[in-house]
Amino acid sequence: MSNNEIEMSRSNFNVDHIAHAVPNIEDAISQYKRVFGAKASNIKIIEKQDIKIAIVSFANLKIELMEPLSEKSPIASYLQKNPKGGLHHYCLSVDDVNQSYEDQKEKKINIISEPTKGYHGRNLYFIHPSEVCGALIEVEEHEKE
Image (cartoon, rainbow, N blue to C red; front, side, top):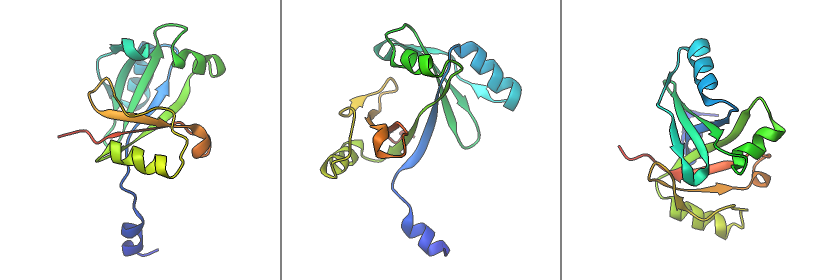
């Protein structure tokens, strides 16, 4: 495939982050620091989603660590099936999340939620794992610079 073919075949979606569900966020941060020398944000509590999160930053990627605050959290049910933790979802970003949502709805894509504001102020929605090889996918607006 030539460079022109690669350029023409690119999507308007970019990878924003990978979300890693963990049973203990402090332990997870320590492991990422020890193994990779990675930097991590402060831990934030997101009551609306019933989770604690922290962002581990690499040169070209962010990993969002998520720990449930209670058994009611969707992350708690994920950890019941995966007690050591694991990849929960990945997030793709777009310029216009509402347009992307409408385009995918028109294509009859199985979307779990309507666009809503995330903890960071950007709009997002989720695509059901049945659409792409069993992966839960979050779609959100690009981070404004």
